[in-house]
Image (cartoon, rainbow, N blue to C red):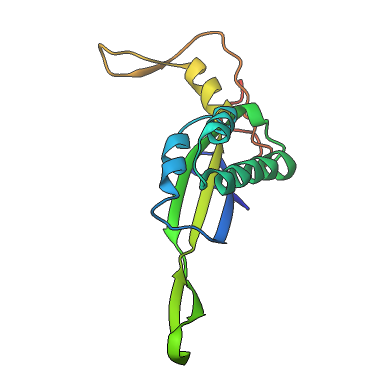
Length: 162
């Protein structure tokens, strides 16, 4: 799935995993470790962590990167996990037979995991182009930098060379 916001020209690509058989209290162990990290670094972290929750998260991060490279033709080296969240899902209810013909209800919790990746290549070029002055608190332009907008959907671009 792809989200595109016109305000700041950021491209966000996300993957959503629903009804994963896991408690919503156990999944944040892996999610908290990868938030605001690069794609490659988060893959290495998730592969080495010993928790059961890390495998579905790894699959979602990999799926979101595949969405970014296939649908938006973004480079995986420039992707950063901007948002990762876990929500509670519905509980799967099972009946277990007990003594004297009675039944016992077993609730298996599920969760929904969302991983959002953002392309930071445009921000890197913007930071190279602009300089922040600590004394005056103003943002000024660096001189002699050629900065082009990589947004193929807009005509003209925001930072075209004049």
